[in-house]
Amino acid sequence: GQNIDQPTEMTATEGAIVQINCTYQTSGFNGLFWYQQHAGEAPTFLSYNVLDGLEEKGRFSSFLSRSKGYSYLLLKELQMKDSASYLCAVKGYSTLTFGKGTMLLVSP
Amino acid sequence: DSGVTQTPKHLITATGQRVTLRCSPRSGDLSVYWYQQSLDQGLQFLIQYYNGEERAKGNILERFSAQQFPDLHSELNLSSLELGDSALYFCASSASGTLDGTQYFGPGTRLTVL
Image 1 (spheres, chains in turn green, cyan):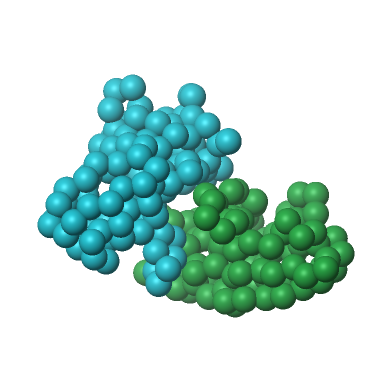
Image 2 (spheres, each protein chain N blue to C red; image 1 turned 90 degrees about the vertical axis):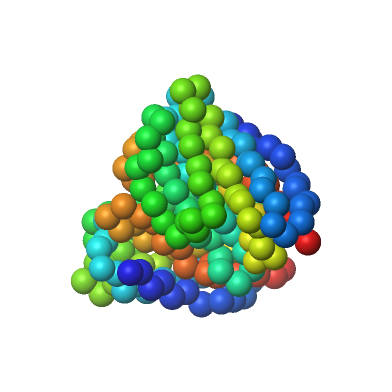
């Protein structure tokens, strides 16, 4: 089975940098996704990591270490609109397991 | 707008009843995924169909079933409904059949079981 841990809540200030961690224990690993979900809306895809290392996409970057069962999502130059829930999801052999999500609150 | 449509937007029903949720994927996408999101369980992957065939299965209850039709739209059938089935049900689609591809989520159907 899969077990995924993320912090429940985080707060940060507009313009700052925040790192959201995700640790996982899995019987099979084939990739890790990050999704953003605003309250009452559908999740939107942010990133997908299969190999170790950092993937950068504009203000957002995602890192993966398969040996440590660890990933993080880095958000730079935070904006108020980044206030949302961030979901980490692990792809197994034939299924997808989501963490409970990290609620990020960005304040002025 | 992701291009994925779901109907209805809201559904209120009673325990023991059966409902059908409908999803139309983005044009050209062959995979459809169903998810359930509740406050206590978070987002749970239920099932994936690819070009009409079941491809992957998650935590889907036996009371729930899905299918994908030749025109690629999909339906999720929920029967013998219980209070705990109240949740937001999302459908997503992707071009890939292997869970690797970017998934585009529909707006969801909010199911309330009274």
